[in-house]
Length: 623
Image (tube, rainbow, N blue to C red):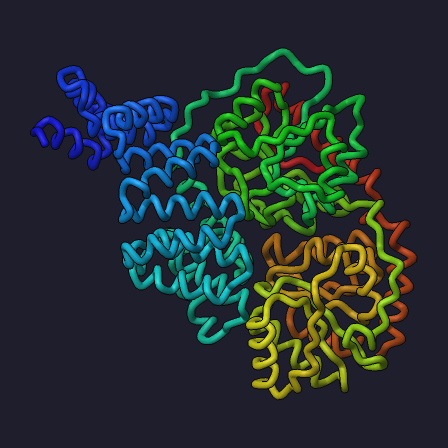
């Protein structure tokens, strides 16, 4: 290695990329066959986000050295960024062909195969990388995330715990471990771990993903800090290239772009599809940007048909999606994902539209200055909570949540004795995800079961280990584990129909039922909720208020427990609630999708008007 070459490498380590680029370019003028210089020049272009130049340099290196494993591996990384996954896989395989000990290529191949849902092959390659380099942190995290995706939470936890042994302070890893334990309902020493994590968030440490914090935290201040940490981390790790959006000639209709990976059989589509169908086409043009999996599900077909344009952008980079949005002259971009799984947050870092809105998918602030608004209502974000949102708030009347008036309920009659429920006993149910069940809530539930003789608690089946852990926790609290009954997963129409077998839905805290709440209400099952401080802890309150059942909103755990016991011991009161719910279903605003659509369209018109008049975003109340 020449001194110049070493100097350039040192400059890369110091992140002086342009200086290093000049030196490598000089080296190549004198040594046009220096394949290593081409490879390193490719690395610089890759870091700077110039993917085409990176690819060209890796190809130049490979032409000069046909068995250059590192260049093939690096080329694969570029192809992944360009969403050419098939070509990337071939490139990683070439790297492995020429270097059987190339642990990074095995890891990258595993990650690419995971994206294609070839899980067994992905696991095989991750394990090969781990065998070659047992202290390779990234492979434990990648394998852990894969196991989470295939619902093998036990093995996921093992991987994350192995990773934290290698690097105890690795970014966001502790939050991952805690969230995985919550999925498994492993609660040993949980309160201490939560407090330790919350302290680290206050110290601005990169300790937890924002979505994880929502599950167990009821502090708006902490949630905003956590979101800001993550947003800033995303911005710092992304080189923005597109400049500001200049004002163009006004479109004949306001162009609304909805961005999501969940336009298929997913809660977001179940809520939004009827809104898409009902949008006023005389005023709005509706464009869907989809970056989710291939789907033949009826909901995917229905959603795609509901848009004026439905564009599959999965194979495009974040920047390309932002560029396409600009070319289409999108006026208002609605991010339906925020920080949830499979989000494409960087589309919005690039600024894909002059007005960017956080809505529905993530129940909280995104902590980013490039989102102008969040759509909410007065229950979700009372005036005293506005300071904890980086976005300005669009207040809709009634509730922020849309619903689908066409949502069908199966006519199948679920008899209690056929689905494992006692015929004559009181049935409490909670069909929320297991990660939302915290020990404090579970303690209350067990006290309720003690006070309501022979009652049972009907929960949604997660996995065997979670079920075993919950039954064990019930036993520890003096409750016969057989009083916990688990419901298998069913198609949505059948799942809705079986709600009739329950008497009362009891909510989780601080992360309420959201879509699960509106499903229960649509199916005719009252839900008792506990309202907290955060957005996620107030959604069920918003929905109950909009359907005229505010008496089922409680403000503390004592009130919640007392109300559940009262209803559990007086079935006539529950019957009255069910009658009221049935009466309110089509007379109160919650399920009035046409009314909701007119309100959200008023909101779009107002924020668009403010933009055109060069006014800064401000809180807006729609009447």
